[in-house]
Image 1: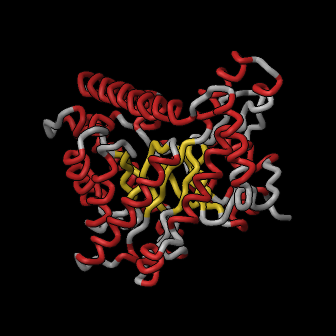
Image 2: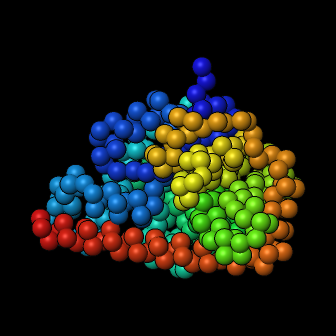
Length: 367
């Protein structure tokens, strides 16, 4: 009998776990999820690592050892994160090989304090790539305005990139264009562009979490009928844009030279509204050539009662445009919402980063 997670894989969805910690590696948890639920990759972010370090004593010996080297809290934090990422990369090495580099990927993010620093982002991305020393690493770079040129520069250097914090279609178009520019420059520099991979992390549930309260405040039957539809519509139109821009003459020429598509990755796929089906943003965004990175709770819900019903994205663009048009009629500006979400997303990651450094500082003081 085909399981829901296998059904997703059969459609062409790569399931990545949105979580990483030393405990998950040493307990065999990640290995079990790979075996039982078709997990073929891992993503991380500052919030995940802040929680991992705050809730586990497993890092204290590593922090103590790094502290004896006189490293700063930030250097120490990157030290333990790099170690976890290397462990996950090694565990997923077989998947990386068997999928010719498409999956078996692990993501590590540059410091969120660099979100508006193009040169700083490029410098740290290159440093992390060299420090991890694994071909299946993806360096995460946020899709801020300052991040866009950094994405092109890092890809041009032959480094695989996970572009994160994408909320709007306008910004997503810039991300794809930066990828194509970076690949063209990498080719000119003599890099093997077939060895470069990229995903574009389009955030989902946070869009509904921002828009649904506005619809509830309006309170009309028309407004309430649009609840929990904006995020899926926005993501489905992103998939249409992915298909359109990867069919351009520029993209097709690069593809003929070995370029792989920059796959859409659905991020923030855990539902925020407890009234919604837990696997909503998984089943409704199933489509070929996509990645869905899930918190473990969402992964288990998908495996338990996912209700996967084939490709739910291709051909849904017209309906999705109707949803966004109805929102505009009600006075809700999706561009304004997504701009706020990007700003809030960066701010939240910076808060998590400082929490992470505080945890490390305290551990150093106690060592």
